[in-house]
Length: 366
Image 1 (cartoon, rainbow, N blue to C red):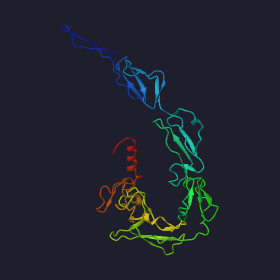
Image 2 (cartoon, rainbow, N blue to C red):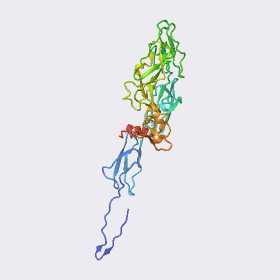
Image 3 (cartoon, one colour):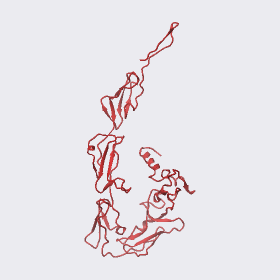
Image 4 (cartoon, helix red, strand yellow):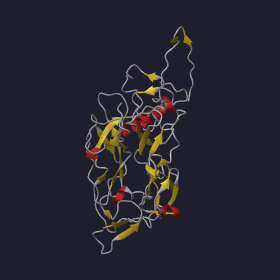
C-alpha cells in the first residue's frame, strides 16, 4: 500500500489524489510455459486469469488460475503444461533395445534405441557407404519422435549379359531370389542376395546357347564400333557424331519420358561405355534409347562456376556454384553466358538449398 501526504493551504488541499488498483499486466510464457492465457476480468489487483495448454502440451495439476497480488506480481501457478511424446513408434525391420520405451508418456529429450534387423541398415547410411545398424529416436519439443528407419541392403545387378533372362522375387534387395531361366535345360539357376549384399553364387550362361546379335543401328547421332564380333557376350562401343556442334558429347540413356531438350539439371542420365549382346540376342542398353548429351568440362572444382557443369550429371561443377561449398564463400562466374539461372546454386545438398527445403516444409514461400 502506497501513502500520499496532502497539505491544507489557504483553505484547500495542495493537490488531488486518487487510488488506482495495481496492474499485474498480461501474463506471459515465463509464468507457465506452453500456456495460453485468458483474462476476461482484467489484470488488476485481485483479478484472476485462467490458462489452457497449447497443443500438444497437457495440463498437469489442479488449478489453472493465476491471481494478481498487491505487489503487482502474479501468484505462483499450481499447475503447468507438459509436453510428452506418445508411445514410441514401431519401426519396420528394427528391434527396440530400450525396454523402458514400451511405456507411454515420454518427456522431451527421452531417447529410445533401436537396431536394424539382419540385411537392413539405418536409412541413408548405405548411400553414404557407412553401414550403420544402430540408431536412436529422440522425443522432440513439438511432442513427436524423430523420424528414421531401416532400409534393406541390395546386391549388385547381375552382368548385363543376362538382361531379360532372369526374374527376381524382390528386385535386388536383401533375401530376394533371382532365377535364370534357360530354355534348353529343365533346371533353372537360382541365386539369393545375402544380408551382406552379396550373391550366394554367380549366373552362368545357359549351355548350348547359339546365335548372335544383328549389327547395332546408327541412331540418334550415335555410331558403334564392334571390333570383337556380335556373338553373345560381345561388346560394341558407342561414339557420338555431332555434325554441327563442336562440343564433346557423351552417349547416355536418358530418364524415362525425357528427351535431350527436356532434360532438367537435376536428372542424371546414365553414361554408356559399351553395349553387350545378351543371351536373348538383343543389345543392352537398347541403341534406340541411347542419345548424345553434352560432356562435362574437365574443370570441375576449380573455383569457377561453369554453365555446362552446373548439373547433377557433372556433380554440380564440384561445388563451384554455391557459396556454402566454396572455401572463399564467393561464387565466380565463368563466361559471359553464365546468366543468373544457369549459374545459380542448384546443388540440392548445398546448405542454401537445404534451408530452402526446410522453409518450404514449414509452410513458407520462396
